[in-house]
Length: 434
Image 1: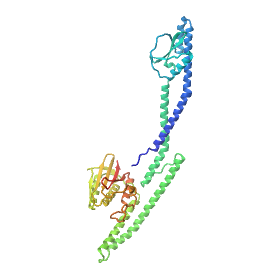
Image 2: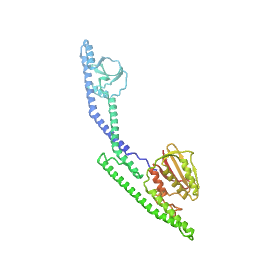
Image 3: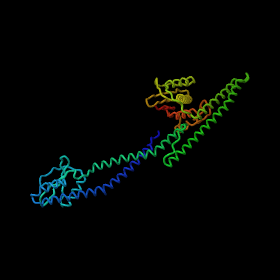
Image 4: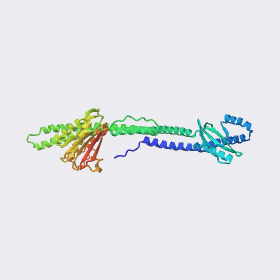
């Protein structure tokens, strides 16, 4: 079973996204370490200097002027000063700026100072500054700091992620879209169809690739057209003498051996059939208009025809299984598979099973023949390849049945798989997607 590979678009987009994420992480780390952290430390040190100076000034002022100083400090600097020994409750804080602020206060006072947090309309931060044996409490609201690292970091990361994804998708799409068109066009060429010309735009390498492919597709189409014309001419040239030979056989003298006449007639018909099969394989397998048909009815007709030809065959199918398909192509594919199974079944029963679901239809033709060696599975779909070593058309056929079925299936988006059957034999499974 072929392993599903990730698309080129996904690989390119993922690679670009990872590279841009790493690049942005490096830039963000450098900006934080060399710009944001030094600025935060500088700001914390300035605030610590102002608070320590305010506490010392308050202590040195006459008692009657301290109230005015406190109001002036609150009005101009949004700092609230109290002389109190009442402890504040411990409350955790996660603002990196506060740690810088605590370090700055410790350097200026020579003593470790723990910032306390209280919650009013917003968080308030308090520092107890020791001055001349007293504890001066100075506090300020969170708005006084002005910085919001979590919000800033979230915004930067959000913008980075969005821009990275957008850029990755755009760049990956610009690279993968032309290659996707090329793959689709190559698939159509492989199915025998003529693809539309690829636009020769974009970068020089992609434009040159599209130009080369267009030239190749045009040459392949000319080659197939020439081959079809040549074979049509050969068919006409061969069937004319065949017709004369058929008339000549009919006009043989009455004393001619019946066995000789029958053998000549058989050889003529066999040659005519071989020419028809070879032409069917070689001409351009054009798209047939799709029609809604009942697959059960089609299988019933094919099984009935096979029984009239001497085959032992049974049908297992739902009463109704309607699908929109190319009816002539599907009939030929199934007829070839059934004919192949009957030929190699060694007079054992062949089963045709149709499983119809909303997404897919599986039609299996199961025989109890000798089976196909695993190393030969890829060869049996080649024209004129026969597992049976003799050249007898009775035991080995012409080697075109599976080749024709495979080409018709590929041209219509179906798939054929040859699988070993439990208990011996082969299962030829035709899959028709919805």
